[in-house]
Amino acid sequence: MSERVDVEQHRADVAELLATLADRPVEQVPLDQGVLGRVLARDVTAPGPLPRFRNSQMDGFAVRAADVATAGPGAPVTLPVAGDVAAAPGEPAPLAPGTAVRIMTGAPVPEGADAVVPVEDTDHVTFNGAAAALATTVDVARARMSGEFVREPGSDVAAGAVVLPAGTVLAPHHVAAAAACGVAHLALRAQVSVAVVSTGSELVGPGGEPGPGQIWDANGPALAAAVQAAGGRVGERLTLADDPAAVRAGLERAAAGCDLVLTTGGVSQGAYEVVKDALPEVVFRSVAMQPGGPQGFGRIGGTPVLTFPGNPVSAQVSFVVFLRDVLRRSAGLPPVERMPAVLDGAVRSPAGKRQLLRGRWVRPAAGAAAVGAEERVAVVGGPGSHLVASMAAADVLIDVPAAATTLEPGAEVAVWPL
Ligand SMILES: Nc1nc2c(c(=O)[nH]1)N[C@H]1C(S)=C(S)[C@@H](COP(=O)(O)OP(=O)(O)OC[C@H]3O[C@@H](n4cnc5c(N)ncnc54)[C@H](O)[C@@H]3O)O[C@H]1N2
Ligand code: MOO
Image (cartoon, rainbow, N blue to C red; front, top):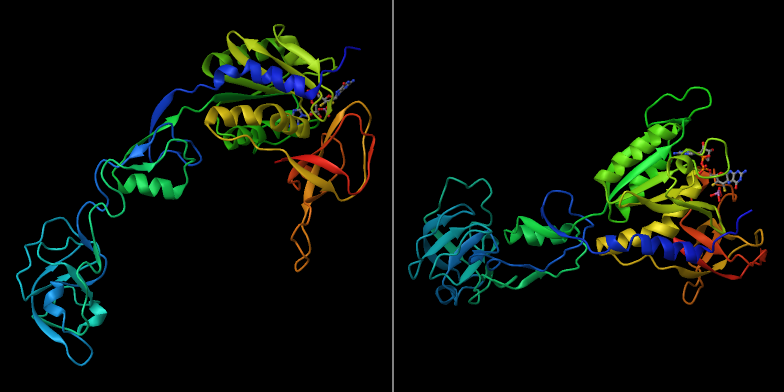
């Protein structure tokens, strides 16, 4: 039997194989085309000031503050209403001294006006239902300082200033700022395009009807989701039957069109290990971990390929351990740090293999003193690599060292957040 390779060694080998994926070209992506979660490659600067022009913060009357300086409850100042400005295209006429202009929120403040009196502080009380009827006068019952309820140009961001710095992981509020500044495209790191290939004659795609001996493909959808969650893009999704020639052809095609090929299944000790058979140029090895022992890495043509085992838990654990951080780094995202935790129960483990058990955080009961409390984890489900539904209940992978055969409750372990 060939010797097992240490997990960290295989991690390093995979990272080296995929080192060329770290430097991503920059692409211009329209704001509304899937930018969320992606990382800005360059600063976004404001092409002009924001707000673009002086505008009203309230529905009310634009005035000269000096004209209403004496206004107060029981002592209103009456002004003639000289016009009406809506938040609509156009430029209002300047405000003559001693007059007011009806104005809506967001409408340009006329030159000469330096304050807006909210409608509630006048005898009009509200403009609701008064679209067509423009009153001839307004009684202002409250004085306003110069500048009150007037939004100055550039008071949010000045022309040329940085709105979003390079490295920003885009969320909806970042999109809002870019859009408000009139930025239509963002310079983003191009995503790594991954071909996700499931192998196995037993597999039926989502929505299909499995016949006797068949199962639904869990790995294809799961790894496609994992690639996206790590900032990559699914360039191709294939499900290939156990026919080495067809698998070879499918993988060559996938390799020609993608930055990375990821396969599942067909890599252990069976009679129909189609990935092994189809890829003589790939190194297949047994990594000292469970799940995720059988692994392969290499290139098809110039394109890197990783071959994960078929068991669905093994495939997902392989992704977390070997590929997630590599893809995140390519996307400009920080790695997901492993963290310390304390075991809530005892764990038994076979010697010589690092176990990555599925675990769940044990939160302190409501009301219990949480200050200084350790983060405790409990094992979820069994160690079997087929227990995909149990894995769905997990928050973390509990990393049990290869040398450990028993860990007692309270033992410190490292966990990989899922
Ligand atoms: N004699 C030995 N048998 C096995 C060994 C071994 O060392 N000696 N290793 C075991 C381990 S560990 C694993 S992991 C699996 C890996 O097998 P393969 O990568 O060759 O995968 P398959 O045989 O194709 O499938 C294994 C298992 O997973 C199911 N599967 C496959 N693909 C999918 C998919 N896309 N969605 C859902 N389920 C899938 C498949 O039906 C099998 O049940 O080998 C062990 N055997
Ligand atoms: O090591 Mo296999 O990947 O458990 O089930």
